[in-house]
Amino acid sequence: MVAKPALRILIANGVNLDLLGSREPDVYGTQTLDEMNRDIEARWAEVAAVSKMPAVELHFFQSNHEGIFLEALDAGWDGIVINPGAWTHTSLALADRIKGLNVPCAEVHLSNIFGRESIRRESLCSSVVVGLVAGFGAQGYVAALFSLVSTQLTSRPQPLPSRR
Image (cartoon, rainbow, N blue to C red):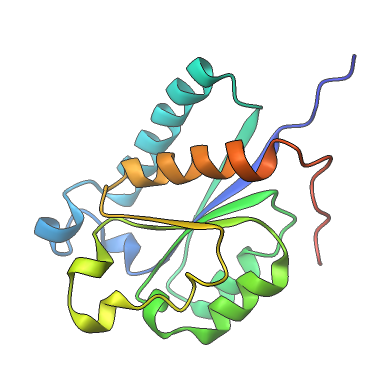
């Protein structure tokens, strides 16, 4: 029996998330982005082991440049966990890109965007993603990843080809 290839999942962090650990630690916590990524990998390994999830390759990416960020979403991923940062509330281009990719995508926010300033309560992406997790810090990424893999990707026959 041939083993199935690992699912390729992008963990995409948008604008200003490179400032984690120093920017508003009372809102976003004190972990740096690198520390958070290592934590997500470690926690995912624990969850995957006890829940018998399919093999997953996690790929981490962050950019403050919207065009580069949009292009990174289009690399033949099986699924995407995305924290767009402030682009959540401002980027119709990002929402259109996610919709056009036809790749299951889960939106994540470290803070509860619905309990913050009114401008942060609207997500332009929420109507084109399969689900949204907000307010649970780095654990939200693991919850989104678990939900994405277990509900959207377990019956997928093969990875989607790159559009490039």
